[in-house]
Length: 217
Image 1 (cartoon, helix red, strand yellow):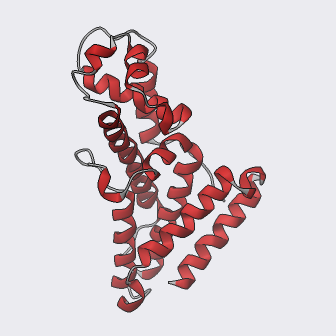
Image 2: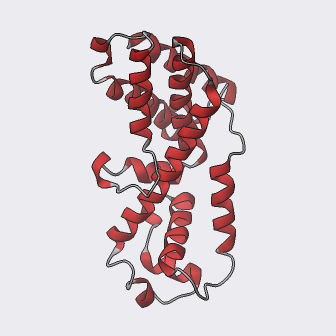
């Protein structure tokens, strides 16, 4: 069943968001602007990321903000990198919690966990999810230490080959099929016919999608 638990990445972001309740006085203005703009994206989606509004939220002039970001697109790139880092951390956390071991069963469990994490991020952070999905794979310069969700998917597929779950021939370009399946399910829940489905119905649907992906590779 698809469940959403408390995780370290979410606790860190809530702390950052709570800091925005206080006016900005000193310190790293660039970082404060990224945090404010990330909150805008989380609340209202990519279109809400505006440099002037981010500056207003932390109590500085938009002229001060322009010293750190030349334009809105520069801010969007920074926020996309921050959102992708959160996304990647959630995927990594769920993979790490899935299963220990080096056999095929453990590898399959970690592969499934990566798919469930993708949908979890879409459900719990729809604004940030829409933001990162609006940019191409090579258009986001990841923050130091961040692990892209797509890279983690590739690693899970490589692990399935290494443990004998799938053949190298079946591995070729499997990222696109697996990614399309969980992304399509996420969009059906966010914007499509499944948005009114019950939690149990969504959980059953996701389990079926993941089964089809696993058996179809």
